[in-house]
Image (tube, rainbow, N blue to C red; front, side):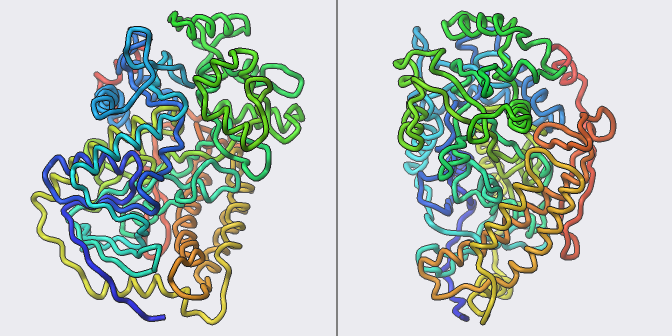
Length: 604
């Protein structure tokens, strides 16, 4: 096959990805009166952001007046084990309340307090009730609001379009090349600046909570264009995914269930989390079940009590490893998880009102009535803290004019993300990326295209059609998921990681020999072949970084190095880049924390 014809579109700013970060970036860029194009792999409104359930973390102080940006900042840094880019965590904590209020002004319908303010709920790792929410469908409301507001600004949307290559001129961005998923026809986007907002990488794990789009496209595109990846060893395994039936294993169960009083129990009915409170959280977590119950009664009745915490709401990395340990010790539920019980804490009416999506999810998918019986839950690959390395103040990569925001970028969350921080991350850094991309475009020269570069991108995309024999991309994807689940999962060792890297090297050679049949129309095998390239880049970066970091921290747990290092590894980020056709790993010192910010950290 040799048809390399393509259509062309030109914009000042091109946004790749139409989830929360992409939509917020597009809105901000459009407000700057520049031409904005928005490319999405799926249909508009189908972004993975709609799956975010629990709420948006912002220190609004509507339930606990003591809450403020400094407390939120400290919680975020503590949750990330202080490997966060401090400036990103600061900006996030300071700006999140404005972004939530902005959503409300644009039409978002949040749950309310008795006196009419936006209601906030408890969530893991947050000192105070902080998550503004819409039942357990917050992400859906966010996308609805951003989408309606953005479309009215005249943003040009390109749906069901996959970008296969970024086009660069030296160290400057000049466009993107891709194809329409419906008919396979090529499309060239000329742009002065580009914002990548393509989301996560979870589809490279066998048990995951991610939708089909989450194949690490933006991370791989940026890496191949010359940008860097950072913190790729840190993968968050959400502690509560469905474990039964097998057809829905990994499907997310919101942390809001535990925020509303749900407790984790083993097969003997014992609450498990009191045995897994780490020293870092011992001072603000209830030492007894009775005290935790008292805190729960007070907090859910509207009375603020931050003196004691329930360990069921410890950060996700701690809870996920606790569940893993219980199952490994033979104390798990019948299908390889533990029990999450909300029925004994809340009335059926409360559960259906506060957790409607969870009620229907279990009723329809698992034939379980959560108002009467416990859920079976277990860890599921959920969120990557790593991604494209960006400047904290502008979200720009080392490629001029190339920006990134949301889950595909790195730095904000350190080694572990607190629940609810993802949605406020999308809003805060989507806005910042869109603003700076627009400002860059205002002074950048008109983009030009290199015909040879474009034709090379087209030939690369068509290679799977031109082979007489080769590999099946769907079978290769299954092998990748098995390898990552087995070797680079929730608990890691040097030997397992080395075995995983060897498996990835073999897969790389086979992916370069994928054979695709038929034509380009609705060809899912072709789509999968391109996704495999991207997932393998992310998988290799994760595996190499995990081998390099010889400690356990946040979303990276090494059985052979079980302790969190207080020396070298507490002071460096691991950065991956493409050099001479191979992946290079570097240890980059964390930026120094200014005295005034250090004082804020020490206040807590």
